[in-house]
Picture 1: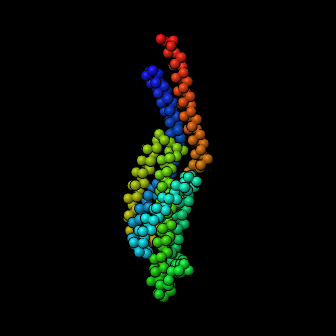
Picture 2 (picture 1 turned 45 degrees about the vertical axis):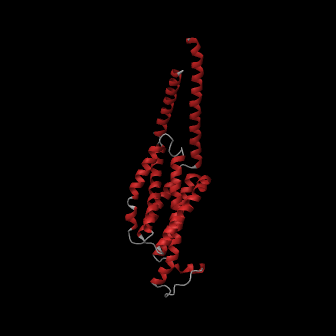
Picture 3 (picture 1 turned 120 degrees about the vertical axis):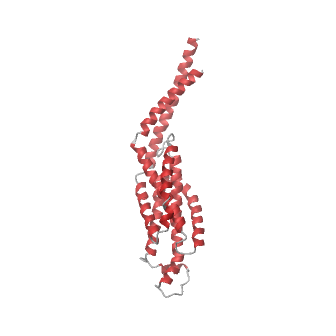
Amino acid sequence: MMEIDDGLSKSAKSIASSFRESLMTRPQYIKNLIKLTIIWSVSSFSFYCLQVAAKYNEGSVFLNYYLDGIAGMVGTIIAQPIYNRFQAKITFLLSYGDSILFGILVLAFQLNWISPNWIEIFGIPPSGHPVGSKADREYHLGYLIPALIFMIKIGVNTSFLAAYRASFNEDFIFPFFKRATAVGICNFIARSFTILAPLCAEIPTPGPIIIHIFINLIAFITCFTLPSKEEGEEFLVELDLFMKSIEERRQARIALNMEQKPKEE
């Protein structure tokens, strides 16, 4: 019986090997590896750059770091239901879109393209300084910028968690038999890129937010090229058919060997 099992195992391995080779040579896998590497790198870089830059942002350093922690909790809570509802592609587009939108608003207020005084309509008391003066502007930015950065960090945390989910769970992005290698490559490059994040955070304002917007825009564009939910389902159907064919061949070979065994005896 051991010889039969060995024969079945070798046959199954041979079929699986041929399937893997045909799948891994597809350009789609290499493209997905490049796309997810970009996504991992941008999410990791933004996460740590914003964390280090919090000490330089307008507002109290204590408030900035409290909001950083809360944004992490909010991103963790909402990432899972959003991903379950919309899958990888839309989740990434929503999270990077959030980061870009609020990043542009931060840039607009830091460069004084838009006056921050309008936040007084939400009950913020006047600064007591002459309207339009530097002290008056910094006073209002101390309330406004932390809130905008908070919204950016929710998007960054969501994209980071979605990157983990997409990389480890989606066979149509990384096939299960190459997943560890693919995620390792993404992580290695992302962490290497993130080494520059603390240096970026030391650039005078508004340098960090400009870099943040630029790299998130690259990731946002990249997300449009990710496989859609329908394309992913097609791949899973193909994979399911392959696994069923393996089982059918296995059962057929068992039956054949069981028929031949009595004759040999």
